[in-house]
Length: 142
Image (cartoon, rainbow, N blue to C red):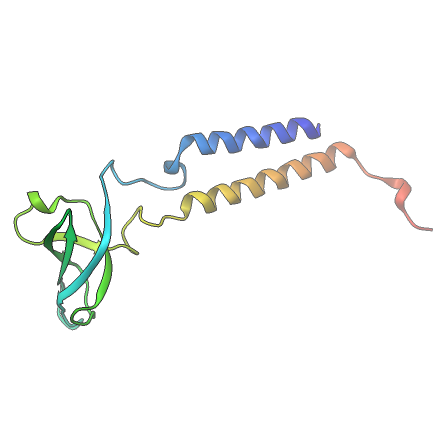
C-alpha cells in the first residue's frame, strides 16, 4: 500500500511539472519580456491623477524613453523595468512597468506551488501508510 501511495504522489508531481507554469497561474501570452535598468528623467508627484513618469533606458546599444505608470521617484533614480513592446516600432515613449510588479518577472508561483504540492503528496502518502498499517496495540506501556 505504501508503494502505491508513493508512486501516485510521484505521478502527481511529474504531471504538475509537465503541465508547466500555467498550472499555478496564467502566463503572459507568449510575449518576449525585456527586463533592464532605467533612469527616471521626468519624475511626477503622486498628487496628480494618472501619474506617468518618463524613464530612459538602453537597449541594443540605443537609448530609448519609456512611460512608467507610477509616481514618487526622484530625478535620476535607477529603477528596474519590464517591457513587452519593441522601442524601435513604437512612436514616442514605450509603455513600461516596474519589474517587481510586472507579471511573469521573478515569479515564485511555480516553485512555491510545486513545493506545496509535494508536501501534500507526502502528507497523503503518510496518511495512506498509517491507514494501511492499522492500529498498533503492542506498544502500550503498562
